[in-house]
Amino acid sequence: MQLNPDTIYYNADIITLDAELPQAQAVAVADGKIMAVGDDHEIKALATSQTRMRNLAGKTLLPGFNDAHIHVLLSGIRHLLSVDCSGPGIADVLEALRQRCQQTPKGEWVRGILFDDEKIVEKRMLTRKELDSVSTNHPIFISHRGFHSHICNSPALAKVGFSKNVAPPTGGKFDFDANGELNGVIHETAVEPIRAILPEPDEKQRLQATQEICRKLNSAGITSVQDGRTTAADLATYQQAEEQGILSLRVAAMMHYNTFENLKSVGIKAGFGNRMIRIMGVKICVDGAIAGRTAFLSKPYCNSADKGILAMSQEELTQWVISIHRAGLRPCVHANGDAAIEMTLEAFEEALQEYPAKNPRLRIEHCTVINDRILKRLKKLGCVVTPFSTYVYYHGDKLPSYGTARVANMFAFRSFLDNDIPAAAASDYIAGPYEPLLGIQSCVTRTDIHGNIWGPEQRISIEEALRLYTQAGAYASFEENRKGTIKPGMFADFAILESNPQKVSSDTIKDIMVLETILAGKTVFSRESDHAE
Image 1: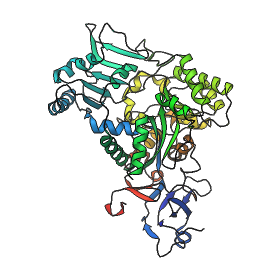
Image 2: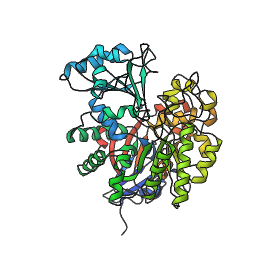
Image 3: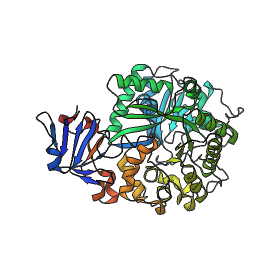
Image 4: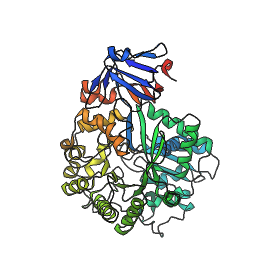
């Protein structure tokens, strides 16, 4: 049966990202999907008396943005329960924590997020003693912006029995002060014992966090996300949020590795779900972080003998990858450093040799520091990679630790595209800013917040960057036939911008205002309240 359009958007500057019709003026939507695309005259002719007509007055309409690796509910919960520790100085951070302690019963946890040693005035990490000066009546736990390093006060360390006489967990690391005492900074898997005892948010808090993070991401034009660490509780919350009508993002979930056995036992495979929530794979982590300078490298960091942190052995990694792949649940492996990426590729090769699969699209999350050998192996295996898209702009001040030669092969979108390796843009929020337009500018200019240029060899065009955030993101989750382009049959997920990113100076793309975000033909964000539904 021929549907009549519910809504027609016309007089628009439409970027379709469809090779057959790259530009258009109007789009008709029916039952949450795109019905027709073309010029104003032909599309307006489809209208009935019931069709809502939206004159966009020349504004730009394009597919809704898709973040290929972002921590969605985790970020929402952290925002809800934690103190903003972004500064500008350490004194400001300590005062914010002190105020929260005054409002918190003794003995209860006080948490902080968004602390960044390179963004803070003092350009250093907080210490255990500084946090003790705030309170020793509360365990205090602060997460670095990169989320792979954390700072604890003495009561927090005591809760899990950490001391100078205790070795960190495998894949973890403690930092020490000049006297050989723990300075409060812990890295990677050392955080797991603390995470295990942190109070869990209740159902009401989880739903509130979901609603608030959806609003935040919708306001940036994001309609789809690929959640980089989805727990069983998170999946349940997403389902509940959808039932209550407050989930305004399409979620492709990388399930936490501790859910694997349960998923396998009931026969769930990658792709299970509906239009809003799908299980995409299982996430495992091989090494550390770029922002925390703990990624596992083949050669040491600049001015250091350190090569980073490895979370598991080759044998353990290979066993995980083979088990997940064999179960049809798609391994999604966090690997930043070149040495960690090589290990991951070895595991992938063994898994595919033992259990061949057609178009498996095994994923390497981040895949940051690469070389020519890695490129060849990625292409041969058909891997999907999800490099950081906002990091050059936001984390440029951390890149000297990697050196000029390595930076030329980091966040290597140009190399991936030139070698036909499927790459999709990812923020890893909270670790990096989530705004896609900022990410597009970062990928196009390779310029940081201070105007410094990093790895100009990896610059890409604006159109290529737009595809990374739309079409490529859909491919990364096996949904390229559902979303990512504006053509008939695709989901009616759009972002409406005040300007066309292809028609402004590349160093002002991040300043373009998102006017409206539409999911399945319904407005989920609008700067003009009369358009909200």
